[in-house]
Image (cartoon, helix red, strand yellow):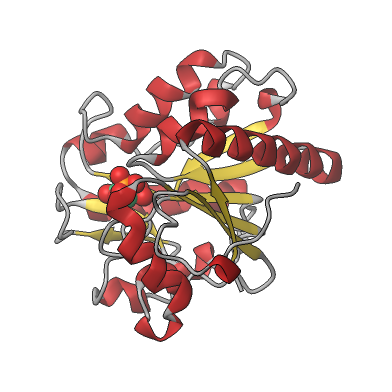
Length: 251
Ligand SMILES: O=C1O[C@H](COP(=O)(O)O)[C@@H](O)[C@H](O)[C@H]1O
């Protein structure tokens, strides 16, 4: 069962998330010397970075940063998930090592070659995880208004992908159409998955995902084999949830 934390507003949400990420990072570094983290695009990077970008208690030099999904555009294009994370987080944290930032291959992305971009990204994952099934310490996901996460959209055949670690998508219903995405075998091998979403526009979908599990929406398929799912949301996004669906926030 996911654990849902609802915060009074966007500032409180960013602050709670910052505290949580700091703890996960400390625990992972104490356990195996680094934090492997994959981050979504969309609204998440701004919520995440508000406090985290200035957090002096995190040893960012030990972070290895991947993307949960990426759009096939150049790194300077406003649609780039890499660019969003760079602007909001990476540019403010010099301790993050350049070689620990695992972005989509820019040439394949610029050429909209989603197939080659996906193959290349899978290679990056295999290299880092030493040919084992990737197991991120922390996977931070957004939730689209249609219930998608990563670039895994409702009803899309990619929801059934079992072999590839990273898959191309050529017909994303949300532009741009060419993208790459982590697949469920990787998503569900994560140690911790945290969904982060905010705002009134998300409240109906949040209610369906948390309280109507039979809907089989992409976010509902996130069930890590050996990990926990958390939802960090604001009161606006939680407005349609029953009180019992939310837990009191504690570290
Ligand atoms: O296209 C995408 O959308 C989702 C959700 O974005 P949001 O702006 O509604 O939070 C995002 O998680 C994903 O990474 C992105 O490629």
